[in-house]
Image (cartoon, rainbow, N blue to C red; front, side, top):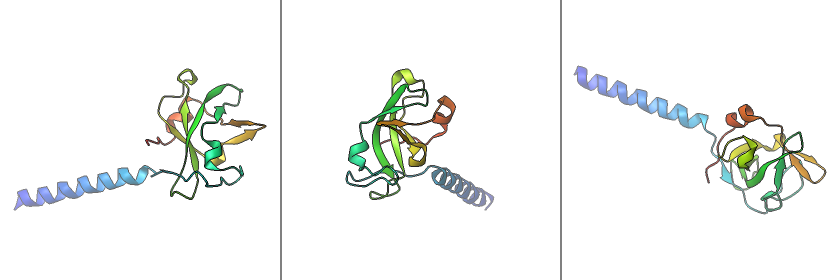
Length: 123
């Protein structure tokens, strides 16, 4: 009986831990190419492949994908950082609010610590 109780308790603990871990990781999907991005007035297709710069004007990567919680709602961009940027090699999701237009350039204010704290997008 004690063995069964221990097994049930351990299973419940594992299930609750796994659920908490899943709840902390936002689920992103690639949005449809025709989705218009609020505030930027361009489509997802227009943005993909554009270079991204830091506040100092240095190129740090390019937009790999426009992502959101569903295929018609854009909430962020997955950036493929250049090897020389020092911001890591994973595609990190920057919220649309963190993306600024400076003329024809897209600018994000990131350092290595801020980039490491952003969610990873693994398409």
